[in-house]
Length: 492
Image (tube, rainbow, N blue to C red; front, side, top):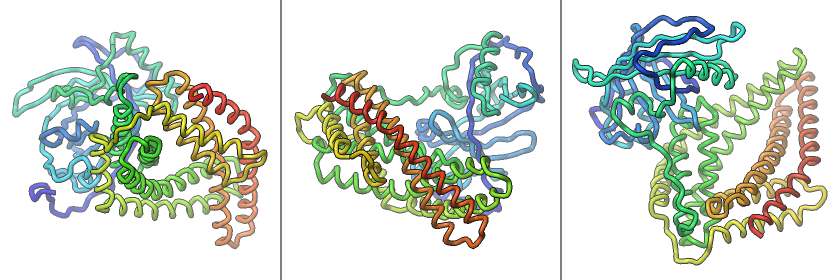
């Protein structure tokens, strides 16, 4: 951090976070909101000063940072990518320098580069809180935007935002259809800041042509997965949306699979070293992810229990949440290590210029090799596979699927069908693994509890895990049969 970016220590309110799901629409200057069922919202003025580096590093990463003034409220707001949605993080703070908290979250994207104001937008917002059967489903905002430089307005435009409030996405689409009938039309997808700066929407690089050299396809795959990892690093550090860590782990897992599947194409020591470091990263992310999965599962199970049985289960969930909070500190500590920053540097270099050796191997051959390993494991599986065998099958299915992704653009539909079936098998075996892990957690908690009621509830939970696994075992055979059929068609 440069000296000019440092701030005096101030007492800050906690950071708040929410998931933002919205649809943007363009409108003409004479557009008027149609009559929508709901509550009209008071017209208000929002003044936002956006910050970025001189080379717009945040914008290129689909990240926005702004200082917003709204009816006396002053706050720093950070929007982070989260799959196809965005996570909005807010910190109430009257200080006019970007908070150190946010700089820490953005360390991979900023490095030592300085943040500075890049645009100021004044937005007059009118809107409606749309309801269905008295339940809020969406907030419609009609924004009249002025881009300000000094005391002059240098650009004006209007747009609609439909933000999902309730859980029903289809109701959001209903609102969109009403607004389109009133004259709204397709939006170019750019956030307001991008329009103000005349920046294009950052889009992923298109895959190479099917007949491109195999190294080009591998390089493209590495670039996509590195980009996905970097996009979800800030949200993982923040720790308020469990999907951020999940997606970062997915990217790590896919990178490992690429280095493993394409091993014949790479300098062996180079690829093995990167795969080793990715395994280190995947291990601690995986421990945190396991706890997230178990907490979500047992919270759902609580609704199925009698009221008197929920208290012991709530204690168990609280026990898991304490472990998860500790694990978040471990994740943060590891992501601050020089080892992690060096891994990121090497991955970015690998995506730009991988160490490929001359080889005649094709992507089809790479995918076929991983499928043959899976086929061999399934042949040896036997009629009653134990947990260790099924875990190994899951790993080999995953590797075969990711290798198939490398060959997708050159093989086409047979590869896509195999990947879809592999995903189904991977999911059901993942559920099996989650059930096994859940039983392990329950037994550990039971050893620490002296309550008779807790013991009774734990016994019921353990029985449910066994029922889960029995059901999976019954459904697995047909799924594996289809997987082999599609694999043989794709890879021979």
